[in-house]
Length: 330
Image 1 (cartoon, rainbow, N blue to C red):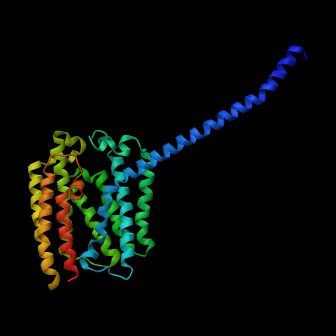
Image 2 (spheres, rainbow, N blue to C red):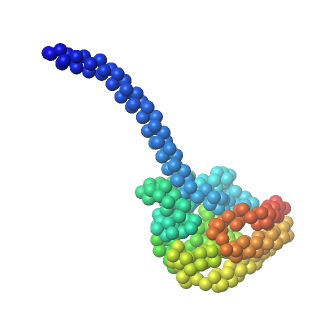
């Protein structure tokens, strides 16, 4: 070995520990950064999953308690537990439907002034992930009834999933039927609570629920027609078959029919409850009138927000609920 080679070898050997230390330090400093990026990505993904689930829509699943509330009984000794499980089942089913619907409508949603911000449409939640989540939630929803020995609950939940899937794939393009399919989702929630607790609802009560649900569905279409104008057909092709004046008139007729049906249901109640429930028709009528006024304004706000965020609307709803509950315990 020459003297130059010896010097080079010694220099390399001497510098090797320092080089290893620098590389090690580099790796250790990069690791937390990669971990931070991974955690940030996971947090964004979980946030997108939660937003796609539409938590603001979850309160509608409380309709599961409508039949037991109207009957002033939970039906069975553990009826409250069964009602909670039915609510969770429909929560999972409805979230699964939101996912499926947004997967099917992803291209239209991207052209919508508000819906373009939904996680699937904006790309925050990959379509592949959304499909997996939707399938898992649907399985939980249907399995809940079998898990508690209530197969009829699974049948109702499965019917909701089937009708909603039909709506997402084909039904939403069939005029008038598509509004009935939207309304049926509310009624099936009421039936789920009835079968879970063994509290059969009266035909009049089901009619009231059906008309109320149809009123919401019709209001949604009217809001789309008035807020989006000619652009509405691009986002929901079925609106080409609707005229705003006709939809508005239909909404008023349905509201009047709902109040009349409610009064007829109340008139058939027991002596103590009858007077209170007939009186509760007044705030119900005021709430429907206010709802009609709010949906008549040009806005892109969800119809559900008008029910839950307007002060006068909430006051009418609270007044109706107070009179209704008092009547139950007379």
